Length: 105
Image (cartoon, rainbow, N blue to C red; front, side, top):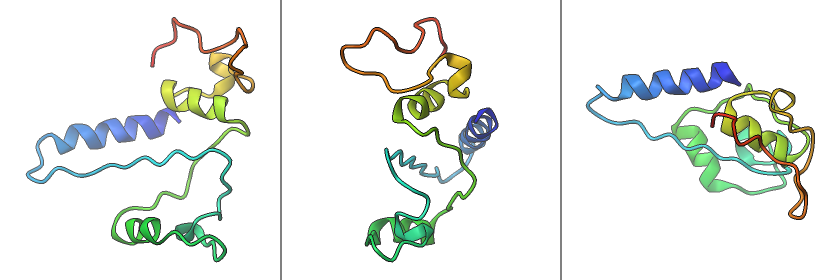
């Protein structure tokens, strides 16, 4: 995850001097399997806009997701694996757990 974020930072830094600025779209979806959308092979779910974006842009195929949304979101915010920031599972609205306020995001 850290390597991915460093790569994004490097691309952003190099784009500062580019004549034409690149567009970066991060799609973050809960409860989705690898093959649930057209660009990754789904024949069941029609996703024409995502299909077009994948054809015209760059499609990443190496990624990691936690089995629950709270852990995946913590990883996205911090750049660290969920166990490293003590996010073992789901955060519930009435719960007292959450991301440590001292954690860098």
